Length: 353
Image (cartoon, rainbow, N blue to C red; front, top):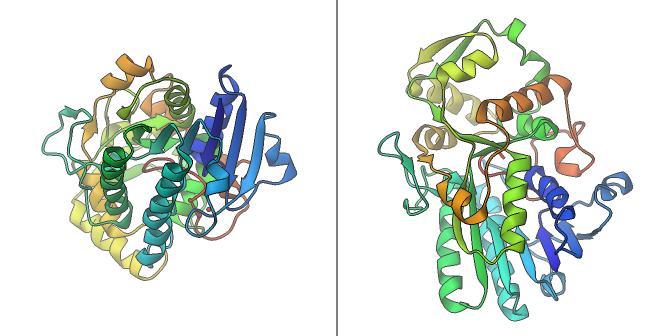
């Protein structure tokens, strides 16, 4: 089986390459990224051939030619101040990739959607994959994820012979992605060394915060199963349980302090407007509105179960922040400056140049 992974060098991509290496049915893996890893990074998996391509402008026909399965992880998170640029990469790039798949008669597509594609929650009850996918806020991230769900609806109607799998992970964490995620959401001026219990006696959190997480290794295994199996459709990927403010505070051994969301949003908006943080306020709105997902379908149809708890996945991230952890690929490079460019990863909300 020949598998082409578009956006292979980020959080989920690197975990997927490792998972595919364990699948005996997979004989060839083509890892595609805009910025190729160093020679050291290219040796992460001995069966992988790396190629450079940008889905927004390069010829994709020769990339997907001969593939049995294409995995689409490519996503651009920044620049949040220039949404037309992320639209060109994320949406127009996906349009171009789907056209290449149709022309090449590729038998299967596994796509990294996100909990961010879902419409806002109406309660704390767990929702299955039938929950509407119209986006949880006007944030570019959620709007684009929702739009691509509609693109896939049209693609499936037009090309029914192509098996389509839509993975919808929660926040995806891994120690080696910590530096990237710090740049994505906190900005390069936020030192990870501050994220330690001794320095955080009190943790201010928005009242009503609910959150789900999943470890990148668990997500990689789910994607690999989607590659080698005959399944199709959408799958929620999350660890069991829902994290509340008190759970987050316990990771710091800190006392949680509840803050009205509108107060935190106002501060975030001022910081984003001043270009001191990269995450826009409407992404905070999405965080506060995301539905809580059931992973039952993934358990039943993929035979998948999370091996890492939500709190342990988040703890892995915090350890990585304190250590300045990274990985020898450009998006995960601990020494990279500026906001992380994430078209070479897909990590759900937390997450996959």
